[in-house]
Image (cartoon, rainbow, N blue to C red; front, side):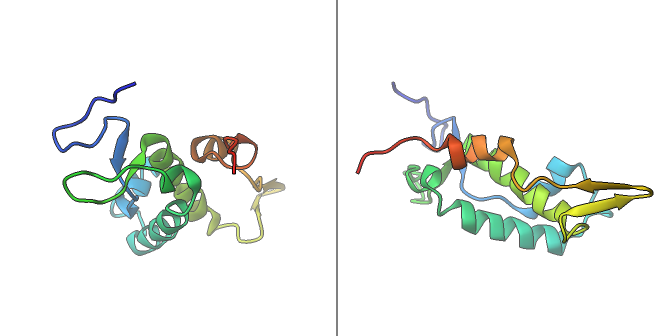
Length: 128
């Protein structure tokens, strides 16, 4: 199967590698005056570093014009969702949130993120 490419040579189902705090703020629909941009940038950088080490991204091609590794779109989306989850987690360091008389526990894994990043039970089998 031949992938169509953009004018820069990057296949359409890939994007420039990594996410930014702006990407996470957009996903969370935060306005610039409400967003803690330093924290968003910090979380985005940590997630970008971690995701760049997983198999899905390690096998990604490089942009022929710049040599920069590009990420599959599902990796970019998964990274954005993971960073948003980590940003929101700052309000619940113990894994639970109290809302008046109710306690809400945050699940330890997000199935959507696992599927997008091919983690856990969603990893593809490999030989060797």
